[in-house]
Length: 148
Ligand SMILES: CC(C)(COP(=O)(O)OP(=O)(O)OC[C@H]1O[C@@H](n2cnc3c(N)ncnc32)[C@H](O)[C@@H]1OP(=O)(O)O)[C@@H](O)C(=O)NCCC(=O)NCCS
Image 1 (tube, rainbow, N blue to C red):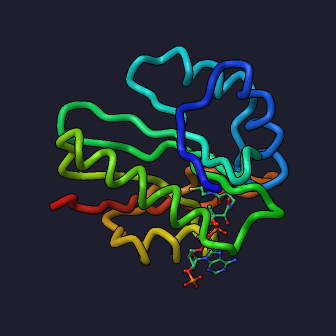
Image 2 (image 1 turned 60 degrees about the vertical axis):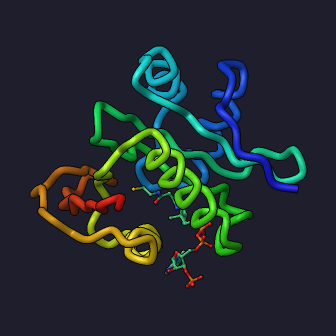
């Protein structure tokens, strides 16, 4: 059984731990708490048999939306959950009249880039040395999708 719903504040610790294991650029618990305090942000969790297996943080201002974070728990990856999560978020944003969605992804994160391309996102720009991972700078790709 799959369920998609907004996470409650007491679930953010579990999400931060999941993200830390799954992601090369994870958010800390503090990052998630700050996001939860921002009325423009939504933290949406995907539960499979009542187990949190992934989450997406996004925001919408007028007709422009942004994916701020996305992760699927390491042990649940490659089973279609990332696709389900992001596809559902895109559908939700469309319902609320968003016409464009933006996101940033690190060059070399092929799993995420392939997922975004599969969902119709295209690279529109590059930000040089945007990420620092293990002391090394990496570029960010800015990707966008029209919601029509
Ligand atoms: C990116 C991420 C969310 C994908 O989630 P997932 O549940 O494993 O992805 P899915 O099983 O739904 O796969 C959907 C598509 O994504 C792509 N993909 C997913 N994992 C991939 C991998 N390891 N290598 C290459 N492509 C991959 C494929 O195009 C796949 O479609 P296919 O199965 O038809 O080939 C997951 O790998 C993750 O959490 N990574 C760490 C966090 C991260 O990088 N987040 C993005 C930050 S911008």
